[in-house]
Figure 1: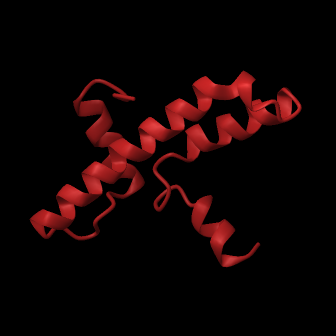
Figure 2 (figure 1 turned 180 degrees about the vertical axis):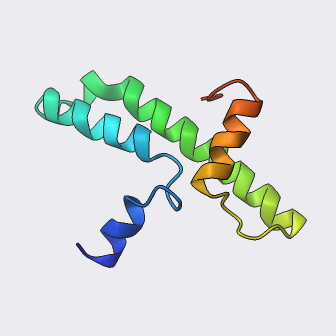
Length: 85
């Protein structure tokens, strides 16, 4: 596995791994008919947008690491009552 694919599949680096995997499974299930998976794609886009905004805010505040770890993200999501996307 090359470095880029390890980075994408690393839970600490990619906060939207679950949404990404779901969209890939949908594409596989519907023989890559993108129109059948638009809800999965939208969920992934919303996830990326949400965590990007968190990362930008942490960068502004000087918090390191800029992207919260998987355990920190889980705590954050539990605090707000689940995924907002």
